[in-house]
Length: 315
Image (cartoon, rainbow, N blue to C red; front, side, top):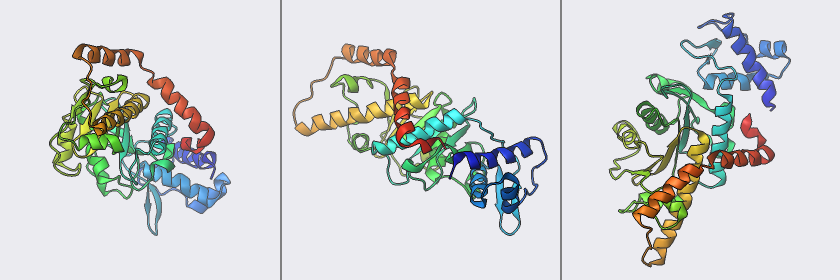
């Protein structure tokens, strides 16, 4: 189905809400009426309404119709670039086999405090997520999990707590990739400075050693206090998350951290003694990585590939 067609439905409804022709609590025209009015199929109308419902703008009521939901921000082409970037991160995480079934979650703050953020909906595989699929979540909205389009409970708990307590962490990517998860399962979870990539993370990883169950309730709040100013939180017996000001930067950290874990685990598997760089060299190399910062051009290249091979990620 064409993104342009159902975006027309979204824009039409948002325009009516913005002009107050449709007010909070009002029922909008039926799907068949909108189909005739906008000269699109009922399926296209339904897709547009689905997207607006995902974003808490509309609410369906069985047997009655669809009404404008109260206390809901109107989203009209807002955060378009942010949505596209986050969708690209999902697609590439799947391509690199960093995802796990329909679990794991990425978020991106869209207001100054970070309390409102984009988040993947429950049950969607990373490889199928599009820009318009992303939910708008408010970390302070206690009714979020009672909504019909509520996100995954652990995604809600972990990312809400992290965004509330770490406003500097605009983008948060949490996955269970193979080698980072292996490192998180070892007694010694330190990223040893054994090559140029591993030195990138020298003294830049927060390490959790107190895993106490899935990221819900107090566990989510506890995790949210551990990140500090580091870009990586190695979650004990759980996986990893990266945090940064942009999607490009957070994804670049995630990519190189998993590569570094692969190198370190491979070195451990040899059974030979590791040759560690000195503190001075490792510290200098970590700083050189930060000064170099090719995250934007790396991510731009990844999006160009998606533009050719999976252009629907922008939908």
